[in-house]
Amino acid sequence: MPERLLLGPGPSNSHPSVLEALSLPPIGHLDPFYVSLMGEVQELLRYVWQTDNRLTLPMSGTGSAAMEATIANSVEPGDTVLVAIKGYFGHRLADMASRYQAKVETINRPWGEVFSLEELETAIVKYRPTILAIVHAETSTGVCQPMEGIGDLCRKYDCLLLLDTVTSLGGVPLFLDSWKVDLAYSCTQKGLSCPPGLGPFTMSSRAEKKLANRKGKVPNWYLDVSLLNKYWGSDRVYHHTAPVNMNFGIREALRLLAEEGLQNAWDRHRLNAENLWTGLEKLGLELHVSEDLRLPTLTTVKIPEGVDGKAFSLHLLNKYGIEIGGGLGDLAGKVWRIGLMGYNSNSENVERVLNVFESELPNFRESIVSAA
Ligand SMILES: *Cc1c(COP(=O)(O)O)cnc(C)c1O
Image 1 (tube, helix red, strand yellow):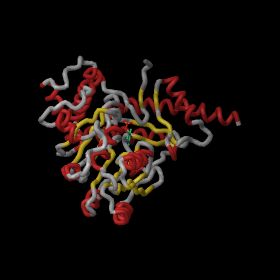
Image 2 (cartoon, rainbow, N blue to C red; image 1 turned 45 degrees about the vertical axis):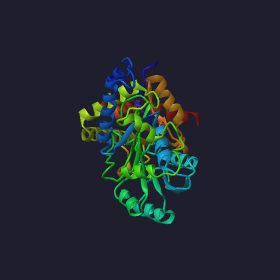
Image 3 (cartoon, rainbow, N blue to C red; image 1 turned 135 degrees about the vertical axis):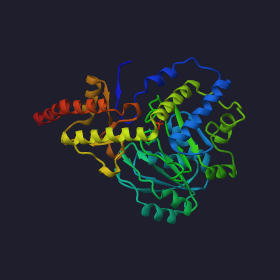
């Protein structure tokens, strides 16, 4: 396998000690040792999310599995789900909710912007949803949705707040309980420095109440948290064979994060991102998102006029083994996406990516100019 520095929208590189944990021989998924490791994973997840939610566990599958779990366990046919869409993953949430027979309503912002509290309140009053779903860190655009007041709005109008924290967990301040978030999910391969394979999931007691009162079964057997909790809770009843090695991996990834301390990890991500932003602007490049809304974990850079963005990123991969991402959806062909997530958020990587932009981008500009 070629050596890669993964500075795209995910996966990011795994921490070496996570890779070591993953390569340990598997043990039984009901082994008392494994059972105590499960408890540690749950407690560490509560810490990194800043929540006391009882139902907090990693779904077997990637972030999208955990995303689907939040929808499957909370949506009943006919429920109104309001999705605030400002990028690619908002659309995915709307698609998933419709598959669970929700009445989906959407509000939209251009890709690179966020929602104001007033806009959200107007939409909540208009649609009176059962659930408001929104993405905290929109990986497709590089914005971070300000969360102040959204949870209070949802309580005021009696709806549940569902939050995508896939690209914020571990890298961006996140306070699920004080923000009054009822359902959230994430993944292992972005801010947690672990390979893809698990999707952390959490649910508040308000969301649990809705689950307990639902008329029909959760229409997805694999992701039904009431069944899963018979294994993750005290009964330890077999549901599906846990991917035990992935859980060794996430346990080590979370332990590393706790050892560093959440605040230190958030500060590190911000500092390295700010250095990246300054360096890119010094090279004459323009960033897509206004500074106050930028995500420390993912930066969108405008592709200069006349440059073939795809050819440039392919060149970086072939010549230097550095992966950066291209644009998705509305931003396809318009931006590069540079991730500094988890283990990868360090000053050496910032230097490396700035150096290759400085040395290689002029060639791409010149070739275009001379061809024309
Ligand atoms: C990556 C991502 C997902 C999907 O996670 P997968 O692990 O790719 O399934 C969902 N939401 C956001 C914001 C993401 O960045």
